[in-house]
Amino acid sequence: MHEALFTYIHQHATLPLTAEHKALIEATFQPKRLRKKQYFLQEGDIGKQAGFIVKGAMRQYSVDDKGVEHIVNLFIENWWASDRESATMHTPSRYNIDAWEDTDLLVVTRAEMLELMEKIPAFGQTTRVMDERNFIASQRRLNSTISNAAEKRYEEFAENHPQFIERFPQHLIASFLGITKETLSRIRKQAMR
Amino acid sequence: MHEALFTYIHQHATLPLTAEHKALIEATFQPKRLRKKQYFLQEGDIGKQAGFIVKGAMRQYSVDDKGVEHIVNLFIENWWASDRESATMHTPSRYNIDAWEDTDLLVVTRAEMLELMEKIPAFGQTTRVMDERNFIASQRRLNSTISNAAEKRYEEFAENHPQFIERFPQHLIASFLGITKETLSRIRKQAMR
DNA sequence: CGATTCTTTGAAAACAGTCAATCTGTGTGG
DNA sequence: CCACACAGATTGACTGTTTTCAAAGAATCG
Image 1 (cartoon, chains in turn blue, purple, green, brown):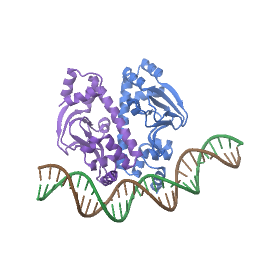
Image 2 (spheres, rainbow over the protein chains, first blue to last red):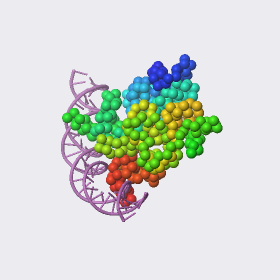
Image 3 (cartoon, each protein chain N blue to C red):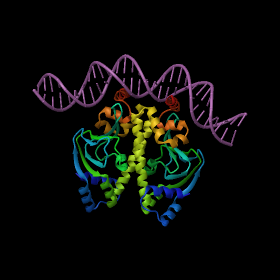
Image 4 (cartoon, chains in turn purple, brown, blue, orange):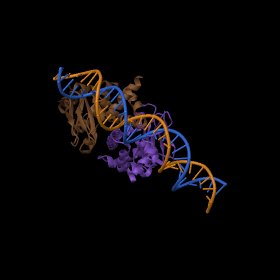
């Protein structure tokens, strides 16, 4: 189970993981299994935990005054599911995170995370790289959202993230892109011409 | 000039800055003055530098096929102007960064930045906090963009970032929000009722 | 003042959202 | 194995919002 995480760290850090490091990681990250639709975090809670996804798929979303869900993030294997805002600011989360498929996670609290970053240099490196990539991805998505019409946004997304297109139903992709499922359906029809 | 940066570090780190640290920072960060409209980074270049804004205001934007500018970020005092994507991936930038007002910067290369993060623990802390906040802000903005209609998005923005409203003209704010200047003008008229 | 930049307005067109109905595929329980 | 329920996708008609284009009105600066 923890092997996936070791691999992930190797891919993102130049520094090595010693046997003791691995033991510490195994002792700290708790395996957890979520069934489809089960919550990992609910709006209003404080998201003290982060989960590394070993197998499965999850979504993070807000719910507006009309009860409509807006997908903020989609996660699959080798992604971290967490609400960074809530965890770092200690504020109630404005988002829900739940399992879209049955999912195997490795869970840590934020405090444990900080501890591991201190004690395991390679882990510190990994979280830095991860933060950097998350930020870059977020900026790209933002740029696409403010710059492009719905159609082009979908094309870009489908191009850059085919795994998500295969894995999640259209209405979630639509919400992720900030459009309705009907609009996405029409865009796709057009695109086939 | 460098005082502003020391203050910034104090505010974001728990660890202290020694006299040697300060000397190192002064030796590394180069003061630079940009006149209004002058480029800090141009599309296609590799953005190896980051600039800490001591005084002034800047903008980061992409230009689409039709020649329309899309504001990706607005920066003022105590913000960092840089294209993280280009700097970390060593890829040509898709953005331009220029001075909106005459601006005083403290400039470092990415390599120097990494070196300082290593040598000065408080600086390492600061960049971590900064990355975290940037990511959180970016996620919030994304959520607002995909969840809200133009009107609500503007209200939220005006509420949370009054400094920007005062400092930048409406057409830049509109672009930042992903709408046209005409639409923003009409929204504001409505809002006054 | 004259030039430039910024903001507002109007009218038409393009775009996206809403609501309601239908269609499709999948899986579950009887 | 079939029938039914359920989740997802599509379609049509309509409404509402946003963009586009063009023009004119403020505001600011050298």
